[in-house]
Image (cartoon, rainbow, N blue to C red; front, side):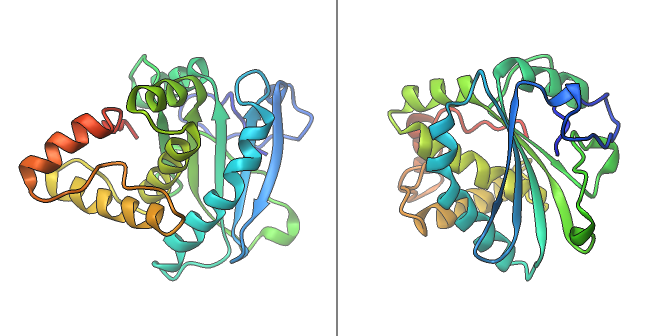
Amino acid sequence: MIDPNPEPDSLTQIDADDDAISGYDGMQWITPDKHHIDILSDQNGWPAEASDHMKACFCQMLDAALAAHDMTRCTVSLLLCSDDKIRQLNHDHRGKNKATNVLSFPSQDDDNMAFYIAVDADDQNREEIGDIAIAYETCVREAEESGISTHDHVTHLFGHGVLHLLGYDHETDADANEMEMLESSLLAAIGIANPYGDIEDEETRDDNATNKMPMTRFSS
């Protein structure tokens, strides 16, 4: 299970009945390619039906991203949380005392991981690639501001987080362009429109990124 209340810069294995996960629903999704998404969802924040709608899209996106990197038997930890919880994680692990839409913690950087999964005995050969946290209130607000569905926006954020776990970032314009193209390709494969708009040139790209999806100034 995922510990949603970790000590800063530490990894803690917890049991399913630990007080730390009270108020969270645990579930596991197994993708068609047999990857795992281990989830804790805030009972007071995320509506139960939201996870049902997201399951197929999340699984397809994870399979496509990992297949492109020839990766098998992988696990991603996913925390569906509140703005308050992601603000705490952002403060504890990034030194930023504010809420954001998504945070990613690659497993290669153990000192910066936010969660630790207690892996079952039959999963010892499974690769844990990292942790993703997504905040509900911020996602809903951003989707409303941009005139898109919350489902499409959250799916985009999950794909964005997965790419971070695989080593992509957006620190430079070139890196941001590459990441946006990969995200758009993953989304197109599951029938979700390009959140960055139709990109014709650099000036148009900047305008569209601002007008179509102002929340894509990611912090992860």
